[in-house]
Length: 177
Image (cartoon, rainbow, N blue to C red; front, top):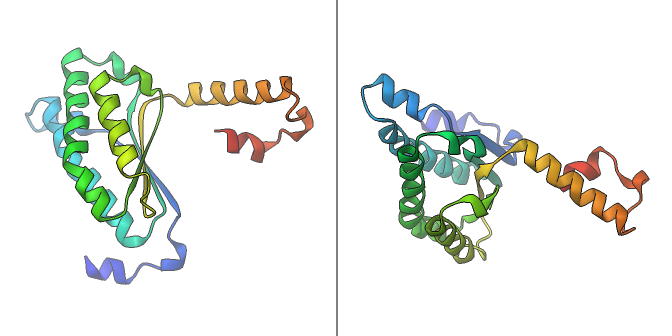
């Protein structure tokens, strides 16, 4: 593994890496396990991605963990995923503090079960002063909803006359996302 690290051009490391967490359930099924077992195994991959991101000096790691469409999965699976989120946050908070990792979340947090929201808010608050890796977990997210919300924010700013229609360009829209 050291050979890989030694051959990395440190000047070409991206500042922001995003990972779509997918395939854990299929892996479990293929290997004769229930889907929840695959999700639990996926936590190890997340931990490895975070560790490597810290080692390489990546500024932001976004984990697309649970989309709005995932709520259509069987209730037993979504419950297991929410329990896994809470238990992982409980286990990893000390690691976040030790390695100066700041936790953020994006998505429609209000759709998460109360215990998940509380734990997530707690860990976000506890790591708010950290200045190292920014770890962003996308939960109950939707790219379409994000675009719609951004358009609404821009429209409101135009209506409030805080910006002009001509101020809106690709860079401005990108900043609203």
